[in-house]
Image (cartoon, rainbow, N blue to C red; front, side, top):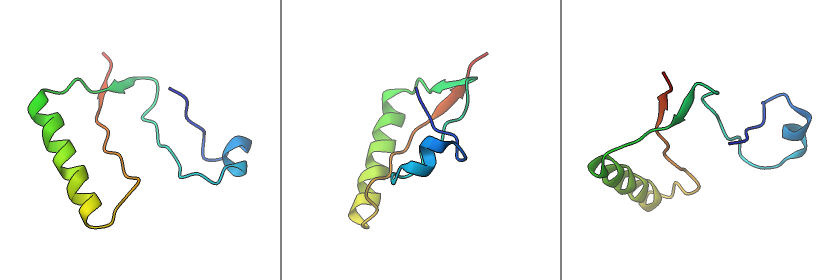
Length: 63
């Protein structure tokens, strides 16, 4: 995964929304299907209210 720092030169040249990263000690969470389904439903609800381009991502700490 690649993320730009808020103050990096690459970030200043981009006109894209900022992608926030939790850091090297985290990875995308391993979620049960029921949680994934609830996240998907919530994203659809956000879309129905006009909130586009929002992705809900869960991270878990690597031990």
